[in-house]
Figure 1 (cartoon, rainbow, N blue to C red):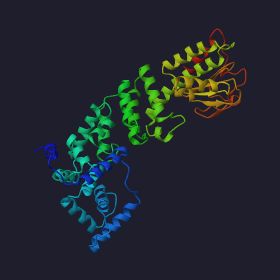
Figure 2 (figure 1 turned 60 degrees about the vertical axis):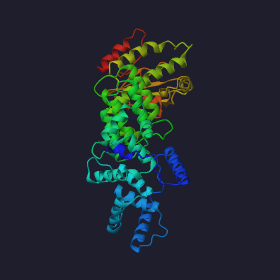
Figure 3 (figure 1 turned 30 degrees about the vertical axis):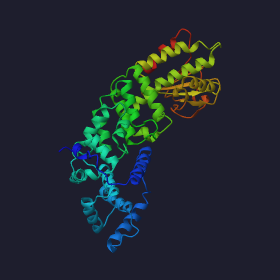
Figure 4 (figure 1 turned 90 degrees about the horizontal axis):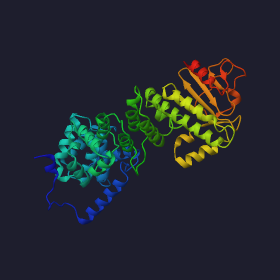
Length: 437
């Protein structure tokens, strides 16, 4: 008889009063609304274990609840707490003999939390749960019936990972199956890795969104843990050694910025875990966004003035250099006069790129674009600012991603071999190309 057959109970099967059933359903609704929330503080566990052990030695169970024993059962299965030999042997016997729903619930939770493919412990627990199939609490009965892969001690995570891949929303599918906590360790940690392994390179907006939604489903707390890092790596990996199509790049940057923040100023520890190669991809993508943003901000700021025409040629030139793959990183420093325009553009578009900037405090009407090309740093600026190339013996090289800049700390003397005026004939462009070749 199959596992699914063994878990389908006959209609006349009843072991609880209607009041107990109603209470059980209420508990399950609470657990569905708050998946993975511990029922007691971890600090209580040693106290409860000591209480159960004392009762065992005295053969006096007055004041000890089945919930207390379930804590001991879960601790034993999870394997993180120290248990005396006497308490260990007691729990081993109880796992074989118990028909108590609270203890069986702890067995199910412990089985998934401690799951290791093909291990003796995992196989033994799976067999015990199959043997107790008629006694399983409703939520576990439903889960194992709908998705028997959860009781496959050898390849279960592979099957569940495949189910996640086929689902439109992996998180919603797992909840529909009846899994209380899709982000638990053990089984679900391995199922997550299987899901990523089986997922083809995400080269469409739909596949990118599916990955991000897995670690940030609607109505749930957003993860910034190892799972989320691995999703970011999966999204960026195809583009470490290839150029991403512009439309998909734009979509990826937008979704990653909104979900995980700008790595140049937010969640530094999280982004660092993605690794240098993937950070290079993200920073290069963000460079393009910052460059587009400053050209639009300055154009908006200078609209209607004598200087309003100057950025069209500069934008074509610098974005052409970017499209050649030459610009690795870029950062913007706005003068105070431009900041309201940046905020207004963000309000109109919702694009977080308009908020990714530092402040330039030396002159309120001058904005700076700081770009890194290999071992060179180029500083472009609005108004009469000359193009500057660093490193230079006259000034320290400006660092990227600072919150505050002062133009006087950057300006090179005039004239200077490492700075060039924007002449109307465009000779400055040829000068820049020579300097960065």
